[in-house]
Length: 55
Image (cartoon, rainbow, N blue to C red; front, top):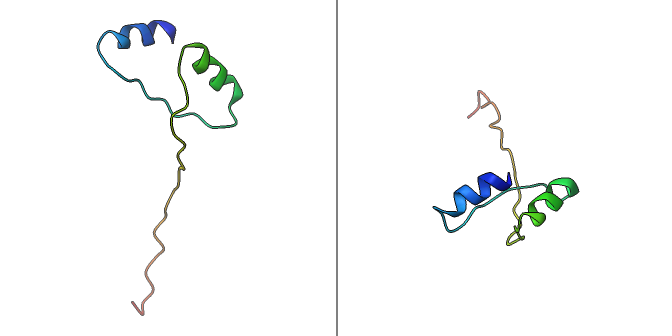
């Protein structure tokens, strides 16, 4: 991960990651690599309901 970040850092200005707020292991790893939290997001799944014959 550290090597990938170094390689990417040579060609991009920002690297973005998404991680669950309760994943303390990943958060610790990413913070140790120099990442910081900049925003929160909510992930959602939408499922279409079958249309009834009356529609």
